[in-house]
Length: 125
Image (cartoon, rainbow, N blue to C red; front, top):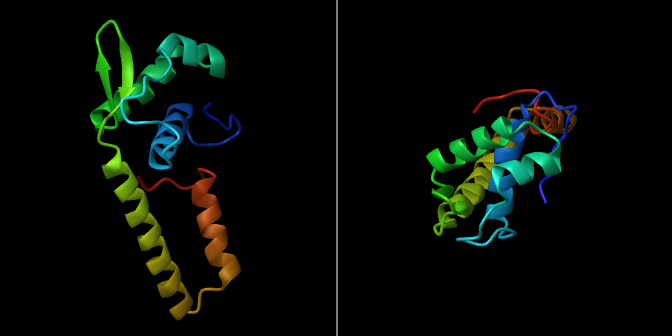
């Protein structure tokens, strides 16, 4: 369900946050859908349950998840905000690429920068 890169410099909990956010933005997770329990997801991914708990806490703080005591964690019913953030991020990326082109940044260098960020080499969030 969720994919992790154990060789990445990006911490596992951040990768999990990104994976859940991406799945919500793409509609792969439905609003109100229950996520796997901390224990079962940790076992499935082969990580410490504290890692999954940390990711769930961050996503709950950010409003993407909500938890019901004794029931589990669920995707927020309002994922439209996440989808809007994704659209805005893509638009900002287009604007940055256009600006880089105007400034004479070679395509290979620009793509290299983007790839580095996506691989977890540079964190700006």
